Length: 298
Length: 154
Image (cartoon, rainbow over all chains, first blue to last red; front, side):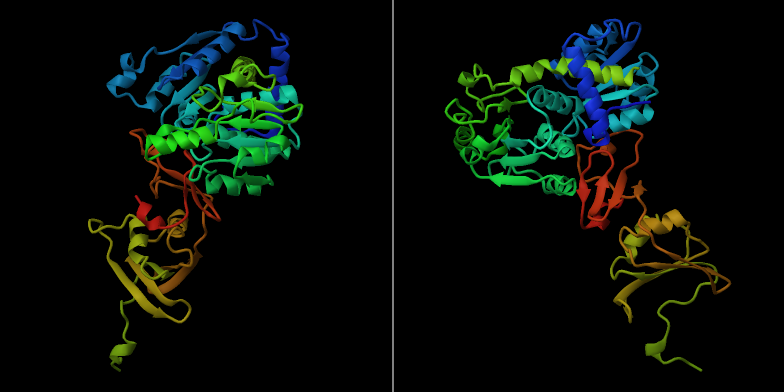
């Protein structure tokens, strides 16, 4: 039985297979009844409207149906039921489970109790493999993944999307460039893992130093609560803001990505530039999740 | 002949049981915690700490009567005493010597320091750590423990 819990457990061949499937789906090449008669349980223990909607859309586009427990407050969880028991019960109702949970490692734990495949849709500050796969897919729509230069800008310490993406990119001989405020650098354990995987990491002080040499710039939100006072946040946030001026002189194939929602990191004036791919990136959530569902529900 | 006091045994030999020797100095009590030996258990127990050792300078020794440690118990000791040697004693003789090996996965011995980890939630779950050269990594949330391991013993 296939679970998709962590991108670390997915081999390069499996990643390529999912991206290939998603590419075909994106071109309309898929069986609209591939999952007819199958039921997906979408269990969201914390709200994430877009991830939930895109998994629901993905299942319905493949002809399947979706069940959920409504709000946590109205379910057995509010009565104190354990995740283990919820998973045992729901795996009797559905053919696969998509789980979003605030605790790190919840999906791996759930997979130990489930009799059907579990897909991790984000567990706390832990893994979120469907986001990583749609990020890879978005890059691959514009260029091959091998040997490219990818910049990460923003909060790289707490941002799980960048951690998972950086790890997945290590399969493709990518050079990683980081631009972060002090204290929000990549965690040392991840740097160690990336070095072990043979990935080169170059640290830059300012975006202007590297922007002309990047193929991809992945921007993440810098959260206000990471800073001691609003003044410090405001000055840091403006230092890391992407405007059309920052993007002058970029490579032809350069693309700008962001997992959304954004706050102040990207000037809305950038949205109309051809390199802005963050809305495309969000849209890619559906074909990627269709490909993931097809993989676990053959 | 009566022994001179400086040559006297700190703790007497045991007839049957386990002697854990070459424990890193100061870790003897942590070894007992790992083995679940507390003041409420029934084992007859001797412990010597900071004993002089030619090999190690100083060491701790633990003797547990009438209990032969199993291999998995021995390997758990590697968490705090990777150099320990274990002697199984029967009728005052060393019946078997067991070296400590670091197991690939250690379960239910140390607590994950991450409060957001599912292993700290009210679930039917045991903590589980991958043992790596650079430390112990939580199987669930990947938090890495690199030092002060004894403080995390459950």
